[in-house]
Every structure is written in C-alpha cells, then in structure tokens.
Amino acid sequence: MQAFLRGRIDAHLSQLPDTGDGYEGSLLQLRSAAAFAQAQVGDIDSEAMQDRLDHALNYISTDMTAYAQELKLEHSKRSIRLDVRKLTVLADTDDGICPLLRIGSGENWVGYHLVAHLAMHRYFTLHQRPVPRMLLLDQVTPPFYPSDMTKDSGNTDLIRSDADRNTVRGMFELMYRFTNDLAPNFQLIVSDHANLPDQWYQDCVRYNWRNGDALIPQDWINEHTR
Image (cartoon, rainbow, N blue to C red):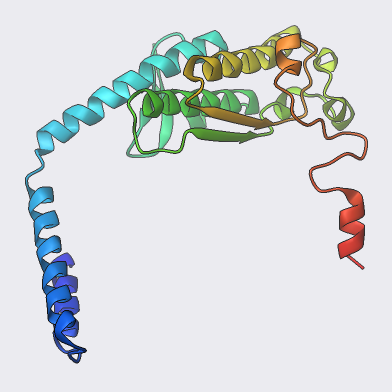
C-alpha cells in the first residue's frame, strides 16, 4: 500500500507543469531527501529498537511499581507495568496478570493513571526525550469525596475514611516530591477540589477558585451571553 501511494504521488508530481528553473531542482532535492530518509529507516536494527523499548518499559515499570506501592493501590505488591500493545496498565499478581479494567474502583483507576503518567514523564525528562516537560491533571480526588458539598469545600478532613484521606494526601505528596526531584525541568499543573492545610501544599497554590471566584469570571459570562 505504501509503495502504491508513493508511486501515485510520484506520477502526479511528474505531470505538474514546469514553473521555472527552480522547479526541477526542488523536486530533485525532495526526492533525494526522501531517498536518504528511507535509507536511514531501512538501516535501523529492529533488535536494537526492541532492546531500547524493553529498557524503557522496565525503567518505567520500576517507578510505576514504587509509586503504586507508596499509594497502596490494589495489586501493587508485585510488578506494575505498561502494555504498549493494548495501551493499558498491567499488574502481576499471584493468580496471573490483571489488567486495569479488572482492578476496578475509581480510586484505583485514578491512582494507576497517576503513577503511569509520572513514571513515563520521569523517564522522558531524565533521558531528554522530545516530549513536552509539562503535565496537566484535572480532578484527581473526586472519587474520594462522599458528596458534592464536601467536594466543593475541598476539606480533606470531611472524607469519610482514614484510608481515603491518607491516599489523597499521599497523591499530592507524591506529586510534590516528583516535581521537586525534576525541578526546574518539569512543570506539573493540578486543577482539583482538594485543599490541604499543609504549608508545602499552600505554597504551591496559585489560584483558589471558590465562592464565585473562577477561571472564567461570572461577570465575563454575563457580558457575553446577552
């Protein structure tokens, strides 16, 4: 299919009218560059590529496992890893491999998405991969709040169980240490209801959108909806 498409493109280009002395030269340069790129791709050692991928996945898996154990996520006692074929998280258990879909609960889903993102971005940053050095996370704690009232207050003391409160605090402590470890080469932006009283947390708060104060002000909305 690729060869057919290249042939069609080449045939189309050859039928275009000559627009001047520079046209043929530019076309030849493009063909030369394409041939050079094709030769480079052809020279890539597939075994070496697989070795690099295996190294990256093992590296990321080590961090994912450590983060998951720190948050005490379900099935985190052994190895946590990425399945690049199905684009999901896998947990190795005594009874076999457990994909994220079978782990269940909103708390676990949020936790495993968080550790996967952090582990991948740590690898990308430390190995100077061409990936933006920024991660934006929106609403990581709603599964832990029992009602909209407590969620809107942001007070973690209103979360029902000690385990959930510890998990929420643990997530933010993990994100705080993660960002400090990679500083100044990485930026983590979190938009969330939680409002921990700890000084280290409050030092990181840039905006507190509550009681009518919001990202999009109400008077701006009123002005543009008339």
